[in-house]
Image (cartoon, rainbow, N blue to C red; front, side):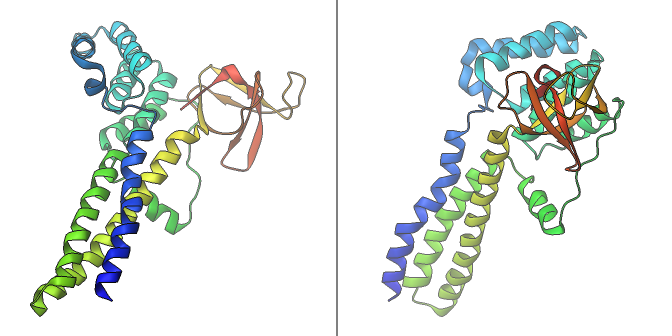
Length: 271
């Protein structure tokens, strides 16, 4: 019976453990930009960093933007770009890139600290929506690592699970079988949690359901038309939830789930 259970688990678990690795492969945002782009782009990033250190922030920002356009999103480059825009006093663009960096690597406390500082420079003070306690717990756990980190942890936990399960089934000494039993249970739980967190982070990245106001101010209207009733005004750098972006010229947004309306598509940039 033990051997049968072992065979079944070995058959099923690769599909579970493999998800985190598939998540990393499927992620359209290439975070490790230096690995992807090679020596030429590595030099460009080094030049941008040097220009930033020399306080040539606009030129550095232009190079960071080119790197992102050519190679896809990178938490490190988005963070540096956010810093450059912050130094230029372009707080909406700084917030946009800090938010992208947080989305790609929520475990980076420096990015979060700079994001709070950038939000303090805006007219409208953003407040996150209230969450149930269990949602806050899961979000806190999920943000401990990046999606790459969860992928590696999931793979390592699965390998440890197989080894400890083997020890439990074929171990000859009682103490070894006990170690194997408790160990493979813990590793099984870690594998599941790692895959859930990796899946949640990938979903956040692909959702593209939040945006930043990029113009000095915009009037939120009741209908997707300039003649719609004016509901309220939001200002540059404010973060909104995107409900509907199927129309070409207008986007439906919400603020803290209790205020909804339409704004011109050009007023926002998706995180």
